[in-house]
Image (tube, rainbow, N blue to C red; front, top):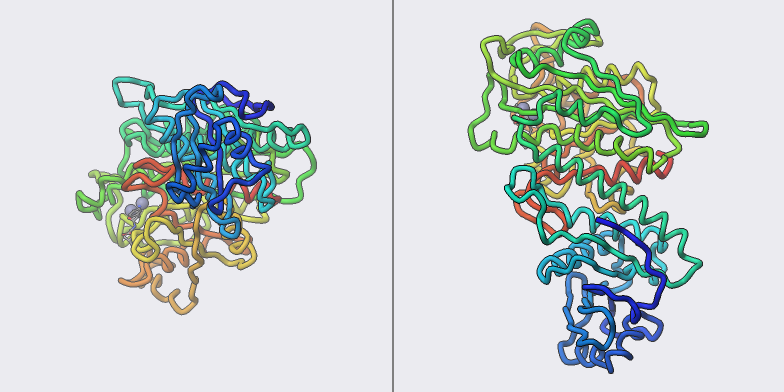
Length: 496
Ligand code: BES
Ligand code: ZN
Ligand code: ZN
């Protein structure tokens, strides 16, 4: 999708589809809608009155301009009341624009910076959200379709900015929004690719050669040398699709005061191992590397986002397969930090891979550590598929992430890490066992991870729900969502 800035009046631009907004059921005398309505001889005004078009969020009307202005079609979208306005409203409008464009085969669209005039968010922020939404809504996974390119994708978007003084912030918002939008799409591609074509080595290839990022790969023998026994145990049943430990490193141009470590769960297929999952539960388990996809996608655009903080990305990529050589329930493994773990359920593999990745990350002495993982079905039960669970040892960090998630349109809900439940992880024969009891599975998983983070400020985000969309919603088609790319990008750019 090509992006440009259009500095002419909307009544002069030639385009397949021109998108403007109204809110609170009236046309503001200083708005694009007013200028256009004059050319359309008051048709907008009468439509608004006739159809009682309030301009609530999600509302839209397509209008044929019948040659009164050069734009062929006009789409009037609702911004909703000013008091409810936020950046997520803009992303939803972007999805409506994209769907309308698709339905009328409009390839070139021109749009206002929706909400830019409300003074709730700057024009730059509004542009960024608009562009994020457009990239996300325009996404389709076509790798396995005969026709490689969907014919109805938007090809070009021009963003209206007739006022010179806003040009530089709109341009910047466009660049950042485009980087974040493309990153979400890359994460989705990685997740949606079937396990057959997304083995640990394929994931590693996606992490290689990223602009401004130094990537190191460690193969099975090196992983063994580092004594990552918990991680290796999971990979034990996959002789022909070996594990790869991925390290990515970005250093900002200036002096950085902070170092952030991001760890993504990278289980390229979770069959459950010998504690095999029922068939129904396995259907979407190619998505068990969603956390890794998020981290790699973010690193792929980090040179464009240019946060002022140092960032490490880590992924302990592996399959979780049953095999004659696979680890058995009851096996005891020794993690890199020396702790022994009794593996009672081989399907609780994510925490085993993360345990070693977290400990490895600690050696870089990050100020902040965040792991993102499709860790527990229990989190899906507790919070559903629109809200991630967040827990950790630093409430201020968690609050910051939740706040950034609010702007990013990604909801998180803090869950506790109760000391009282630590006993659940006691093993009679090892330092820990990898599963707790029947209840609070998300919390015991979090408590398990806590054993490997030391004293660093740490947050754990369980994305088991939001990582996957069962049905399309607004700017998210069915499949991998690429969740947490936006929140983490915002978080890093805010200085962490
Ligand atoms: N990858 C799954 C968690 C999951 C389930 C993610 C559903 C997305 C949707 C994880 O490895 C797993 O299997 N967890 C087990 C843990 C249990 C054995 C303690 C679970 O949640 O059932
Ligand atoms: Zn599992
Ligand atoms: Zn898993």
